[in-house]
Image 1 (cartoon, helix red, strand yellow):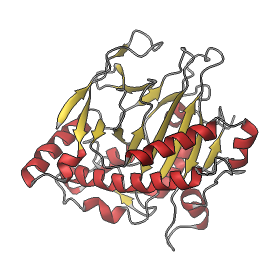
Image 2 (image 1 turned 180 degrees about the vertical axis):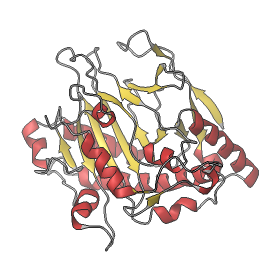
Image 3 (image 1 turned 120 degrees about the vertical axis):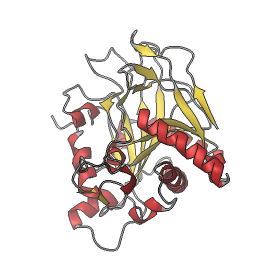
Length: 341
């Protein structure tokens, strides 16, 4: 069920500090279809992974390959268009997390208070396909559940990304079942927190560089994800994702094809009272003239979910964090990373 995913070479151009990857792989199907003893064994291993780095490679995930490939190819076609065509899907509101984000729109390291040049990437964001009927203030509703901004071209983009979004939402629910077991909770523990989830899909293009990056400029600056869990379809050919290990060394994430890279975010770490870690990661800037692509799905809670210490993560001392409403927490973190200067 567990194996090591090892990248046999250092990421090109990342410097001598970069090590080979040791991110473990987990067979989700073996958990979903396993007997109670097998599920407990797998869940115990996942708990150890999340205590150590919070990063794993998810295999046997159940998402049809055709759905993944259709979404991947449509995103590539979108990014291949002239800038003026892509800008038609740009929101007039710079704080909107949906639609097209051109180059230099974001500096993720700023979410940690680190001042860096803007990231060398462009992206297209999709939010929830529907929202709750009530319970969310109007301004917050627009941020988390507002209408998506679909371009006219490619014509199939809305259809295939909607299918992908639905599949990844279902996958996120299966992953949370595994995570609940890893935390020694009932398998359906997280369901009530995700009745109207603030899920988001970010399709990202890292263009082949035309010139050397500025000092400390990367494809994506060092950051930790903000929410519950991230399910990443990473480029299977071109490396770039780098993860900081507990000892401080950076490792190149493995190149995987029919698998996802899953990591927990700050909200999940907070939820577990830091029993689980939200690990820093970044995307290197390529110096080999290679274009890179990825699709990141952020599986988050409902807006009004209160994030407070999970019962199995209490210690004799008071929890480290006060309860926080998920929606406001996520919007504050997103806006902190926007490149406004």
